[in-house]
Amino acid sequence: MKQTGNYYINMSVISVSKALEKINISDGLITYIRGNKERWGTFGKKNSHLLRVMLWRMYEAFGLSNEEIFMVHFFFSVIKNRNRVKTAMDNMEQSEKSKAWYNKVYQFIDKKLVQYVSEEKNGKFAVVHLPTTMPGLDLLCTVLTYEGTDEEFEQLMGKQTFAQLNLSPELQEKNKEMQIEFWNNTVQGTRNPDKEAHKTGFVEEFYKTSAGDKYNLINIKSQEVLPKDKEIGYEESEIREWMDAILASQKVKRT
Image (cartoon, rainbow, N blue to C red; front, side, top):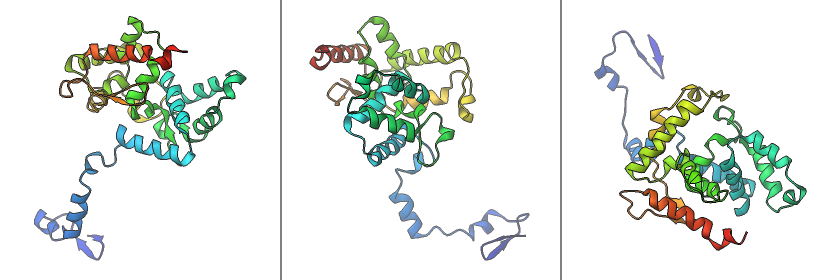
């Protein structure tokens, strides 16, 4: 016999009908569940949308300015490694360290970010997920480091965050092929202690999650750039036009 609350159940003989006598689907529970139905599809999960909410709450609590938030994303678009970003910032010229954004960005990375999900304790955020919270911004940051060559364009289309865009089937398939090549033939193991990271090579279920996001591109004015046809998604020519427009903008050209 097992005691459950103020009643006993004989676990060896209990039937469905008997078990149902101990369940009450009250009006209050129905109201609660139905009133929060948008939550249950992602309950207990951390998709890019929920991660973005967590991250922006941290930015707000830390008091980061618009420029400081951008620079956090910029540094982790260059490399997704917290310690290497910190080391690179430590080694910057004094003229760079005197920038208005430097100190607060460094402090946020030092105090609030960790490398892996298993280290996310006491309000910390794993940088392995940071670019995926804003895929369009990650790609914009990447293009700001480019000269506009065909080789760079190919690199852009192979990025993990590129998979999260609202891509045409053809372009999605191209990215997937590049991701398969990367994970199966380029990545040489991982130091990530998280169990999920020990799935070796390309993982179909992870890719499907990314491909289901359907994010938009972002331009140099921090505005979303919609595909010409939302149902089809971005064609390769649209991505090229977007990249060329960023590099041709007066903000970029005058530097």
